[in-house]
Length: 271
Image 1 (spheres, one colour):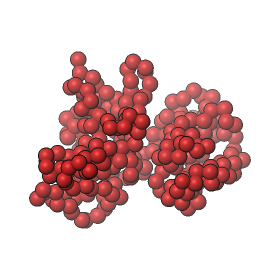
Image 2 (cartoon, rainbow, N blue to C red; image 1 turned 90 degrees about the horizontal axis):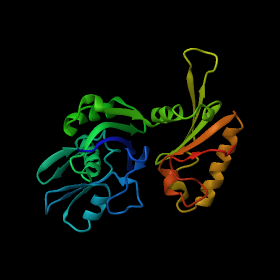
Image 3 (cartoon, one colour; image 1 turned 90 degrees about the vertical axis):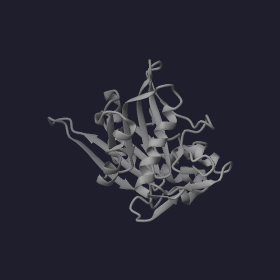
Image 4 (tube, one colour; image 1 turned 30 degrees about the horizontal axis):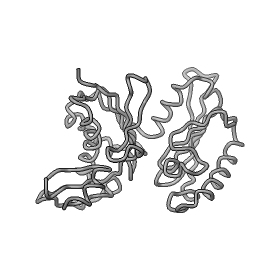
């Protein structure tokens, strides 16, 4: 019997991370690169080999560019609004064309690891929900040959809210703090749920700290990054009673050797 997977795709500007539901452990499991089992962030780059005519994505593209002649393409997410076209082997591509191809290849690279694997459900999370992203990905179900209902597109914040309110109630009995440290910098969200209203009302307070904390600002100085983050966290924690704290984003992952936890890890018992 072919494996049918529930797949989550976190699609950011520079990297993509895939996870799937493991039927045996009944837990989500991150997908590592084929050529590096310790790395879960897939670079958002494409490589077309002029020797074989094959398209590569992610870590395989990074490796193939040094072993074969061809065309390397990056900055795909950032250039979605660009009118520029790129010629590959006599064929003209727009950045939106390449974006959809990249997303499909990321998914295919995982499915190819299993014989006759299929998609039962695919949820794609993007930094901010927009009609542009939705329109580009709305036809993906045809390319993947799955029912339209099998693919869902959401934002990082919305997916975070789904996750938070599917945890035990004790973790969101008071306010919940969510720090998202991505390539554009640090953003803070405080999530509150009404207690005396029906239906219950969820409110989100947003603070943009990207001008104070960005990946390019620190380089390898993770100590100063920790100091600055601690100041921001201390300031925000004084504003409300916090039941739980969530850290997400590539910034926490890339600096996991410092005092900060790895991206996506929940902090319990901190407060």
